[in-house]
Image: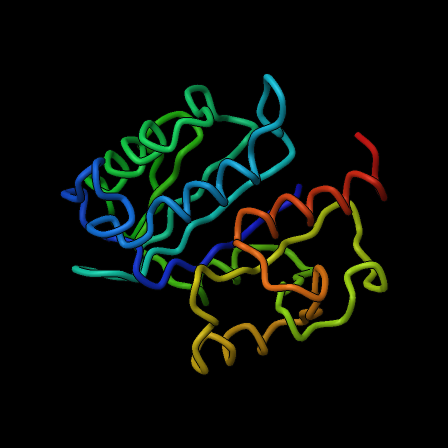
Length: 194
């Protein structure tokens, strides 16, 4: 299973954000959903071997994790607004125990530490100052950790450092989160063809 964990530092934890203002009221929900789409969608299908977890840390009640399981998704497409509607629905059902709010979409009150505890190693943090990804061992089943437009905080870095994690870079330039997800998939697709 390929996994992508995306930390959304401003991602709204309220279901009351406007679908017309995903960047503002949604706390850059547009960016997070683009990353989820990059992780889950291929031409005319969903990557059934992939899971994307969005960790929302914005107001009013962080943290919330939303896990999208490609093997179970039934109504997920490239339209960001529809994806935002599914996230809003999930945010209306948050509890400590993970629950499925829609087919393949799971929500829980979990932060980065709890999410990483539930993910098997190996873990790869994608960061600009990491080792070239082409020089990093990437097995078929791997989890990538990324952030939104903000770097991981010192506290979040400490959480990640407690795990056995490789730090990899996708190239010499700063990339959007969704582009980083696409390039990581491409690297895995080349090494481990479907």
